[in-house]
Structure formats: C-alpha cells, structure tokens
Amino acid sequence: MFLVVFRNRKRADIDAAAYSADADAMEALAAVQPGYLSFKSYTAEDGEVIALSEWANEEAALGWRRVAKHAEMQAKGRSDYYEDYTLFAGTPNRVHRFARTIA
Image (cartoon, rainbow, N blue to C red; front, side, top):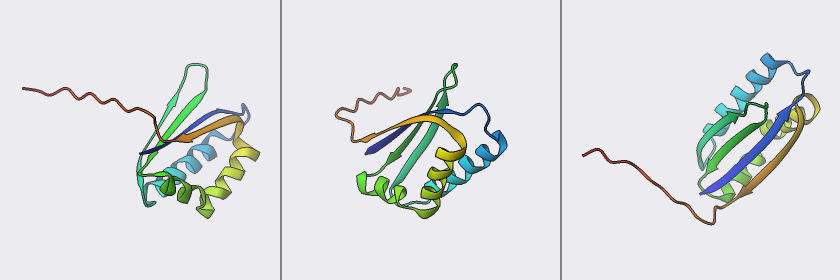
C-alpha cells in the first residue's frame, strides 16, 4: 500500500463550479489507473482539505503523477485554485486494522 495525502487550502476567489467539475474529472480518471485503490476527501471546519488516495504501490502512484491530464490539472490548480498545499507520499510504517464481527 502507498498513500498520498494532499493537504490544501483553496483561494477565496475560485470558480467553485469549475473546481468541482475538474475534481470530479480527476477522481474518475484516477479510478481507472493501474494500481488505484481508493480516494476520499475531507474538509475541516476552517476550510482546510485533506485528500487521501491509496495505491497498490509507489510505482502506481508515480504512474498517476505522470498522466498528462493530471499534470495539466496540477498546473491549473496552482494557477487557479489553491492558496497553498502540501503533499505527503509514502508507505506507512505501521498499519493497524479493526473490523467488528457480528456474531
């Protein structure tokens, strides 16, 4: 498993409808990439967003980074949408799981 955490704040003056359409398109494109496992996004009360994507391995995540339409959207994000962002990527050192079983 390889995780990519994209922590961001959007600019106050963005076109929210355009951003939403672009985000939906990127989510759909990522979902058909080799090694894609999942994507979820969470917005905090203060507006900060955490987007978490899970990939089978680092090679799959790097493959997604190199998809031309994704690279174009990254540039658009920097020019049109984001005030700032930080990206964290890596393999977790520890994974703990819990699943309640119903008897």
